[in-house]
Amino acid sequence: MSQKKIILTGDRPTGKLHLGHYTGSLAKRVELQDTCRQFVMIADAQALTDNADNPAKVRENILEVALDYLAVGIDPEKTTIFIQSMVPALAELTMYYLNLITWNRLKHNPTVKLEIQQKGYGEEVPAGFMVYPVSQAADITAFKATLVPVGDDQIPMIEQTVEIVRKFNRLYKTETLVEPEIVASTMARLPGLDGKAKMSKSLGNAIFLSDAPDALAKKVKGMYTDPTHLKVEDPGKVEGNPVFTYLDAFGQDKSKIEELKAHYKKGGLGDSIVKKYLLDELTAFLDPIRRRREELAKDPKHVMDLLFKGTQAANLVAEATLKDVKRAMGIDYFG
Ligand code: TRP
Image 1 (spheres, rainbow, N blue to C red):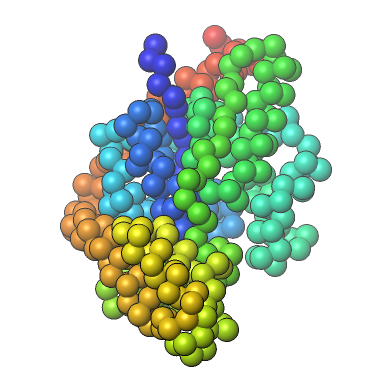
Image 2 (image 1 turned 60 degrees about the vertical axis):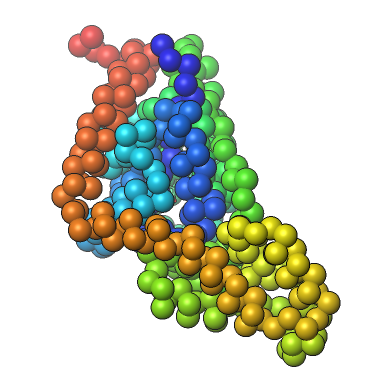
């Protein structure tokens, strides 16, 4: 048996991926695929928990997310990329795990609570949405993943997965399921273009990996900076100024960035000059990604083929775990 660490992670296909996804987890995935056995899942079933009225949107974004993955360098030779709903063992595991967690515990998941609030569900939250952290536990444990590289909004999901794993193993006196741990990003969380804490598609404050050069230029130009930095001569704030946070994340010349920061703090450096510098750095980062993406997008059948192969491989692993789970529970009636 290989001692390689196992990774399972994924994204809901509800839109194209953006720079926040890159710093939050895509960068880690590209790095870790060389040393770990990595599974990356396009979480269409989870996306449907709050998009049941719009499956077409989910369907269309499967290809978009796959293109984003391939364009940033997730390599299908090293990473198994697959579609969640086409691995039925995940749904079955979810059924069994639902009995190991209380309704009360689900109601207190902070990420789910926040999402319910943002979506304005109140008491009318879809039941599937309420329990998606349990299906996430199924995703992770089906692959016996030990590492889950995700953004920090996903921490409560990993905690709940660990609880389910412990409960399962204790209850059924087994070591079938494996406890995962989160792999935190080593990059700072990327604020939105508007300076809000998080870059997000729904907040409309994101730079997408696929943004065309003119869209990118427009977004950078319109970025929020230090609102007290009115005149060029005014001293400006670097902390909490997204232009500098992005430079820290994507700028190549660290000493040049330090120089710009010092100048900005002292006064005499205009926002438009820093933004122009940032635009050049982002362009250097995003251009090759966008080009690769455009190339891959010419042959969607090839991409779907890769997903098909990945899904076949994922099914083998998840089915084996489901078998182990049923055996541990003593419900493998026909052997
Ligand atoms: N919840 C993740 C997101 O919002 C997607 C996801 C589903 C996931 N299952 C997972 C992430 C398992 C990590 C592990 O994008």
